[in-house]
Image 1: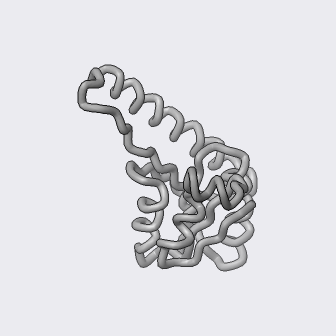
Image 2: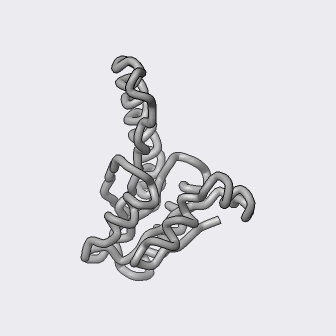
Image 3: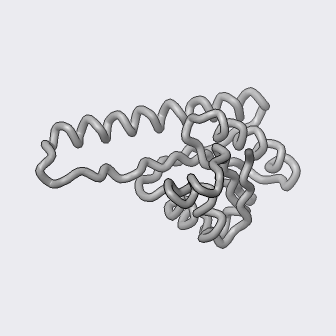
Length: 140
């Protein structure tokens, strides 16, 4: 059975993406895999190990919370899903996971940044659309 990866970060746009992915999965007969990507902690080496540990624990807690919210939506629709937590750059991590044979495509909610903010700040959805070799559905 094919799967659809759904990028989740706990935001309303990502939860909107989960709802759209549910409809898509039913239409193509796919299973959902909800994916949260924990970005790397970019701190100078002089930062205390305890501070880095606390940040990593907070990121893990955020991942669990976001995945639980998304899973509740899927369960409420009478479906089941798998939960995946990755570490790394979000777009690149999702694109790498999407290369698996089982993956049909990726769904990601977008916050609706304008062109200027995408250039200055970057956009995971925009980057994923350009580097992923599988279909990417961006939900706004």
